[in-house]
Length: 93
Image 1 (cartoon, rainbow, N blue to C red):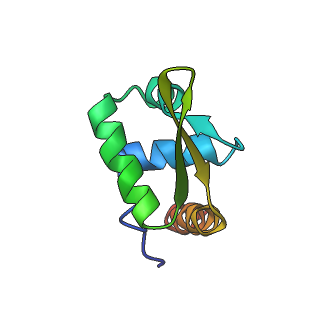
Image 2 (cartoon, rainbow, N blue to C red):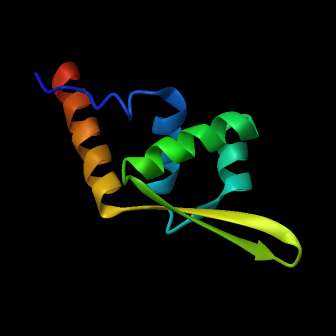
Image 3 (cartoon, helix red, strand yellow):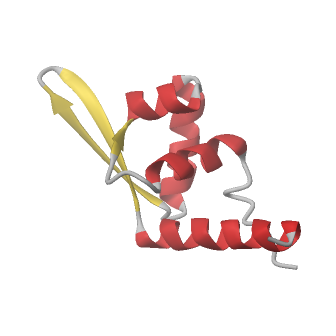
């Protein structure tokens, strides 16, 4: 059996990666709404994904408001696909 990536095995990190797999980029507010998480928890989990090289985070401003954009990296895409394949092997799909 294949090992499941412990970084992706977290519910919130898996949710973030699932959203980003289908988008070119997503901002923090969108991810917070889609994952129904708190801002603090989401921020911590995004930092973990970025540190692992699974996502890129770009911070900037729109007018006077801060805007945080997240994009999945190729490394993150590969890790997610490997994770899904591992799940399929456990489920015999």
